[in-house]
Length: 92
Image 1: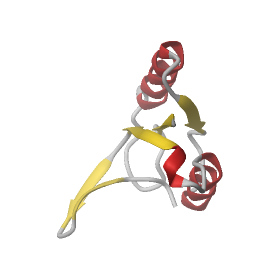
Image 2 (image 1 turned 180 degrees about the vertical axis):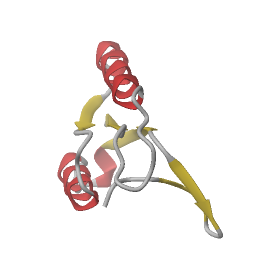
Image 3 (image 1 turned 180 degrees about the horizontal axis):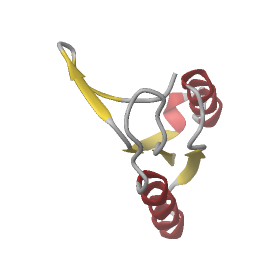
C-alpha cells in the first residue's frame, strides 16, 4: 500500500484578501513530506481553478482503493463556515 499527500496553498483570491504566506507554507510542507519518503506527493499550483484541482486529485489517487494506505490533505488559505460546517475557500 502507498501513502499519498495532497498539498494546496492559495494566497491570491478574487473575492477575499491576499494571504502572502500560504504559498510558502505549502512549499515548506511539500519539502518536509517529500523528505520523509513516506508519501507520494501532489503539489497543486496556487492558481489552479476548482475543476483543475478536482482533475489533478482524481488523476493522482489510484482507482483501486486497496492500494491506498493513507491520504494526507494539507491546505493553507482562507476558510469559511456555513450551516454545513467548515470549508476551504478555493478560487472558482
